[in-house]
Image (cartoon, rainbow, N blue to C red; front, side, top):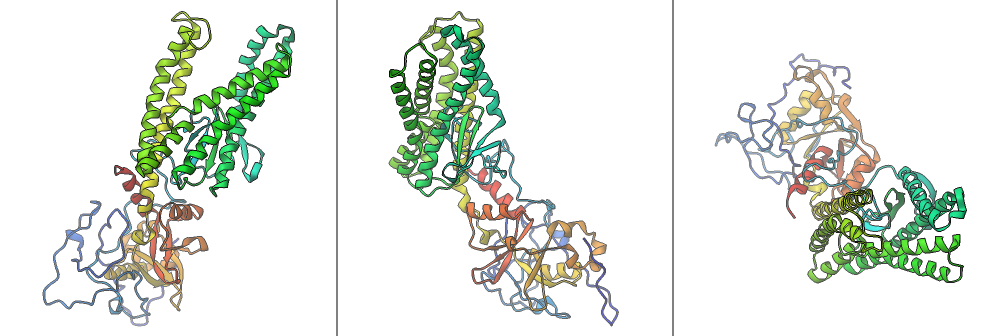
Length: 534
C-alpha cells in the first residue's frame, strides 16, 4: 500500500526521475561477477522478449568503474544525499531493473497444473506404495506408486496412528465398501441361502476385513520405510485400495527392492494364515466362506502386485534390478514404466478374453452379454490406472533428476538496499545504476527489514513513483522468508512452500545478505528444467 509522500529536502529541487528500464530475463539471474556488458537503454530494449536486450557500447573515453567483487550481489547502502554511483561495490554495465511482466501477488509458490506440458504431479516428489488412485495399480490391493503431495495431511476420516503414521479413510472408500457388500452378498445367497437378509451384514464384515488386509499391506511398506529412515507422511485407504506416502526416495536399489517386495510378501503371509484358518473350521459355514474369500483376495493382491511393471510393486522391483545393473535410477524407471504400459494394454485386451473363454474358472460367456460388458469396463478401468501410474512415475523421475538444478544461489537477484523513506523512483534509479533487480529496505544500521514486492512496484504508475516511499510497497521479513543461499532442489522447494511469499531474502551461512529470490523465478526455472528431455 503506498504511503504518504516522503518529505522534500530544504532546497527545492525536482525529484530524480527513474532511469530507463528494460524487461529482465525470464530466468533467475546469477550474481554479477564483474563481466563488462553494455547497459541497454529504453529505445533499444525489447521488453517481453525473454532475453537480455543489447545496446550500444559506452564511449571509449567514458570513465570505467572497477568490477564488482564476484559472488557479492548486495551493494553497499548509500547514506542520505549520497549517490549510489559512489558505492565501491556497485557493478557497472549490467542489465537494469524492472519487475517482470508476470509479477503478481501470489500467496504461495506457483505449482504447474497436472496435464501441462512438462508439469509434474507436484513440486514435492513422494513415493506412494499404493493400491489405487491415479498413481497406483488400481486393483484395490496395494501396489507401489508415487503419490501426489497434498498440503492438507487429511483427505478423509482419521482412523489411527500406527507406528506414528496417520491412517485416513477417504470418502470414496464407503462407495466401494457398499459395492463389495452388494456383490459378495449376492454370492452368499447362492452358497448360504439360509442367511436371508443377514448375508449383507456378513458381506459388510468381509469388505472391512478385506481393507484391513490392504492396510496390513501398506503398513509393511511403511515399517520398511521407517526402518530405512524414510519419513512416511500418511496412509490413505481409498476407492481402489490404499496408498502410503513416503517422503523421500530410496537411496540404493537394494532398499528399493526390499521396500517394494515387503507388501506382496505380507499379502502372501495373510493368504497362508487364512488358509490355515480354513482347515480348522467346517466348510460351508459363514466362517469358512469368509476365510476362503479373504484367502483368495490376498492371493490376488500378491499376484497382481508382483507383475513387473510400474506402478505395481513388481514394477518397483524391476526398476531396482535395472538400477543395480546400469547404475542409473532413471534407466530403471524408464524400463519399468514401459513394461507397465505394455501390461496396461495386456489387461485391456486379455482380461475380457480370458473371462469369455472361462480360463479364469468361470463359465464361458456369450459375446455381447452383460457380463462381457462388465468385464470390458473393469479391464478398461484397470488399464487406464496402470497406464496413468506408469506415466506419472516417468514424470516424477524426471522431476527428481532435474530438481538439483534449482539452486537458490544461481536464481537469486542482485539487490539494492534502500531506507524506508526513499522514494520509489530514486530506489529504481539506484537499482538501475547497480544493475540490480530487487530492493531491500534496511534500517539506519544497514540491517534488512523488508523486501519490496515486485508486484507492488508494477502497480505504481510512473508519474506516482517520485511520491511513493518504498516502505509502503514492502513486506516485512519474517523468519521463514530468510533462506540460505546453499539451498537447492527439493529442500529449496520445501522451504518456500513452508512460508508462502513472492520474494525471499537470501543470506550466506555467515548471515551476510546475498540477494533476493523471487518465487516467479523459481517457477520459471522449474518449468524450464522439466521441459528438457532426460
